[in-house]
Image (cartoon, rainbow, N blue to C red; front, side, top):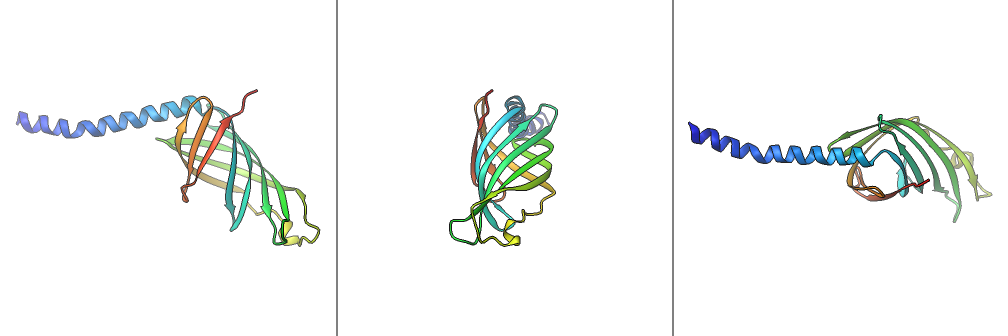
Length: 161
């Protein structure tokens, strides 16, 4: 009887250690995440490739504010439209998975195409977005996330000042 209890405890120990490691990771993320992070990115918005820069400000009370400038290519050669994107919402951690939920507004900033159609200049309709990323690395100056579901990596830098 004593041996079976001892064997059970030994088999359970790795799971306890893993749970503690995940908790330490989450505590590390919670320590470093609050602040403003600047990220250059490429993404897919409703089937159209876009690139830009985003500033995400995470507060310790679980709120997030985002401001981004997207450049979306148009069908005309070398033409693009820039959009200003703002969002407010919340963030939550589950281990190293960061989920952000926010309400989004998007407006056209500028365009370098003379031959745009009204369909091309209309911003994608996004009112609420839920984004889940896996935090791969975080410290006082660098934040690397793995985007879901495609698995691409995005590196962000802490904004100072």
